[in-house]
Amino acid sequence: MLEKEIEKALVKSVKDRGGLCIKMNSLSMSGIPDRLILMKSSKIGFVELKRKGKKPRPLQLRRIKQLRELGVPCFVLDDKEQIGGICTTSLSRVC
Image (tube, rainbow, N blue to C red; front, side, top):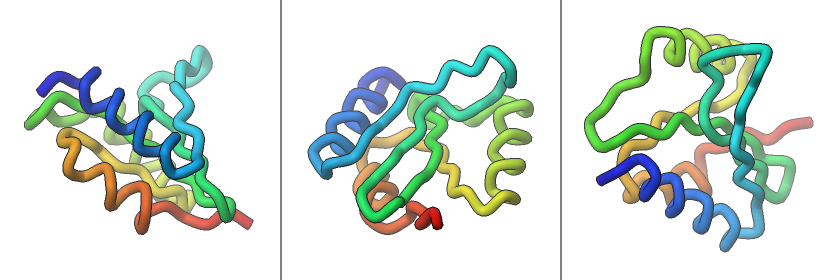
């Protein structure tokens, strides 16, 4: 399955649940995850999208680690089946 197919399914799923799935293109910091998810009740998380079976590059792994150390959930998504768990249970509440 292609990354863009998984990304399209993620965007639709988040939108269907009333959230926003923002494409991230940082000019000031390389390796930022592909999407920022914002859901009701102040829930937030980042998603790095990959083709089925592919792994993040070392810089992407470093950024994911940095964000997680700040208490922000970050996920690597390489299968449409993982989307429901990310959207419904795994996001953090932001004060």
